[in-house]
Amino acid sequence: MNHEDARFRFARMLPSSGVFSPTQSGPAVYSVMAVFLWGTSDFAGGYGSRRANAFVLTAFSHICAFVLMFAVAFALHPAFPSRASILWGLAAGGIGGFSLAIFYRALATGQMGLTAPIAALLGAAIPTLADIAMEGAPGHWTMAGFALAIFAIWLITRPEETTENDESGRPKGVAMAALAGVGFAGFYLCIHQTTGSPVWIAATSRVGSFATTAVAVVATRAPLRLDRPRAVLGMFAGFLDISASALFIFASQRGRLDEAVVITSLYPAVTVLLARLVLKEHFSRWKFLGLLAALAAVPMIAAG
Image (cartoon, rainbow, N blue to C red):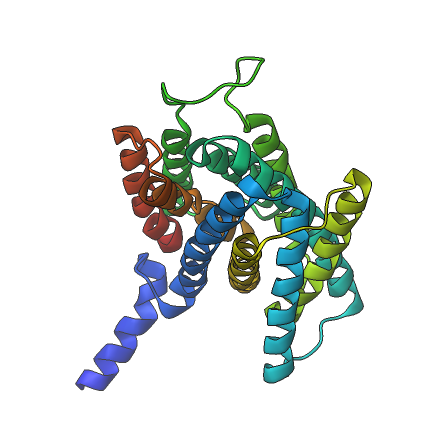
């Protein structure tokens, strides 16, 4: 047997041995990329919402996101999705857009290191349980990775002594973060029903996102004002958010929904790090341990 034949036989053995293969690790790589983009986007959006109306900022962010992804789609000329996929994309965008505005408000009123992981935990748990019920449980390594990821998010969400509470005694922003998490779960479940070009689906989803946030702006009679720093933050958040959405759609189409959701739901680690570095928010040893657990969970999920 020559060396080329040996390499060929070894490559065929990889999927069954639990070691990474390009097919297995591909969706995980895109999910990890989405983690960094979504984490940075949420920090920018939450920070911008501290001195701007969350609905106005989010609506502007969605316009910028649509323009970017439409330009990408126009340049790449991918096949246009089916009508059913367009409708699912619009529904996902409508739910996700409204939830994102609430989430930005939660980030602005509470500690980012607390509110971001709560939304991520609920957003991950609901579609993960639904996918396991529909497709069956994944491999043992993946299930262990799920457990470690949930533990990581819990560590990052542990209330600190410095957490500011509202009038009811709960940490500020928790209720809104929980509501946003349920909405994120709805986004994941709807977007998973789509097929076709992730670029077009991401672009059309922002039409639904803008529609719901625009209605919220009109209903709340929010002042249509954004100064230049907040506009820049909104545009930056929109570009990153739409890019992460396209990566998530790609990952969920080529792998299991629960794996893509759980990995991408680790994005609060990035938000927490940025809040620590930029805003000097308290960063305990528990959060640091949670970040390490999150890093360990990703390869376990991908290897399953």
